[in-house]
Image 1 (spheres, helix red, strand yellow):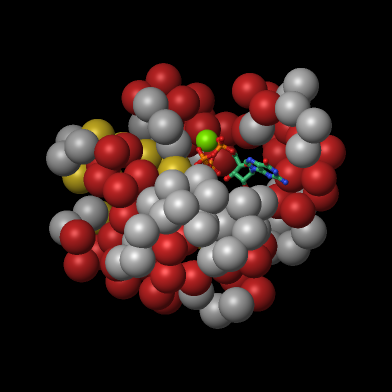
Image 2: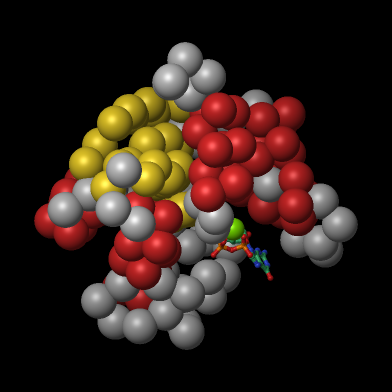
Length: 135
Ligand code: GTP
Ligand code: MG
C-alpha cells in the first residue's frame, strides 16, 4: 500500500489536536506506520519545504514549523496520499470545506494544522528525511 508523511504542525500540537487528527485518519481506514514527536531544526525544515524556498512566506514558514514540537506520522493505505489530502482540505482553511481538518479547525493559511505529502515522489523524499530507518 501507499505511504504518506503527515505532520501535525506546532499549532496543532499547541491546540491539542493530535488525537483528533489520528482519529480521523484511522476512522478513514488509514494505518499508522511510525510516529514521533520532535522539534525540527531549521536545516530539516528548509529541506522539507525546499520547493517553497523562493516564496515570500518561506522565512515565516520555517520559523512557524520550527516554533515547537510537531508530530511526524507515516501513514499507510490504498491511495494514502490522496486520501489524507482529502481529509486535510484546501491549503487555505477558509476555502477548506467543513468536515475537513483545516476546514473545521483552522483560519489562517500558514497555521493550517497539518501537512500531507502531495505526490509519491514527495512522500518518498519526506519519509526518508523524517524516518531514514524506515524501509
Ligand atoms: P503542506 O501539506 O503543509 O505542504 O500544505 P499544502 O501542500 O496544502 O500547501 P503548500 O505546499 O502550497 O504550502 C506549504 C505550507 O506553507 C502550507 O501548508 C502553509 O502552512 C504555508 N503557506 C502556504 N501558502 C502560504 C502563504 O501564502 N502565506 C503563509 N504565511 N504561509 C503559507
Ligand atoms: Mg505542500
